[in-house]
Image (tube, rainbow, N blue to C red; front, side, top):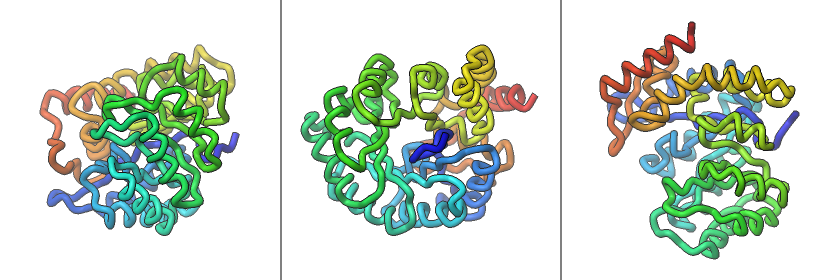
Length: 293
C-alpha cells in the first residue's frame, strides 16, 4: 500500500559534531541507514531532531541535504512548527523551496492558545505552500491537545492530510479516523501495535532510528492479519523502546544508540539537552545487545 507520507516513518535525529555543529558525514550515513532498513518517510527537524535549537537556516539546509540524499526513495517531511505562526509560515516556505515533500506541524506550544487559535495557526501554515501537512498532536510537550472537533474541522482543509498522534487517546483517534479521511500515524513507540490494530496508516517512530526494519516487520504483520507475530515483534522491541523512550530523553538516547551502532560518529546534543548518564547508557547497550541477538 502506497501512502502520501509513507507508512514506516522515522523522526530522524540531527547528527552533530562535538562542537555542536551539524555533522554532514553523519547525516549522510544516517539517511543511508534509514533507507536501507526500510524507512519510507523521514521527518527532518522535528522534536527528535532538536528543532528548538535549530536556526531557520539550519532547518532549511537539513531539508535540502536529506532530500538530495534520499533522492525520491523516501518521503521527506519537514518539521516546521513553532509557537509563532509567522515563523512557522517562514519555515514552511523555506522547507518547500528546499525540496520537502510534506510538512509536520506541531500544535503551537507554550502560549496555550484556544482551539480557535490552534485552528487558525494550522490553516495559516497549510495555506502557505502547496505541500501536504501532517498535524502533530502532542499535549505533553505543547501544553494543550488538539481536540477531536478541531481535528475534524481541520480535516476539511485540502492540504491537511494526516495526524501524528502522540496524545495516546485511542478512542479520540478512532473517532477522528471514523469521521475524516485523515491518515493517523502513531507517535508513541510503546503504542505502535494498538494504533496499527485500530486503523493507523503507519508509524512515526523515534526508536525507528535504530529499528526501522523491525517496525517494518510489525506493520507487515498487522496488515497481513498476523497479530500473533505482531505481538511477538512488539514484545521483542519493548526493551529497546524502554531504554530509548523511558530514560533521559528520546533524542538523547536515539543518538546514543546510533553512535553505539557506529551509524553516526558522535552522540552530541545541544543544550538544554545533556548527554545520557551512565546508568541509561548501560540499559541502552543491554537492549541493543538483545535486539542484535
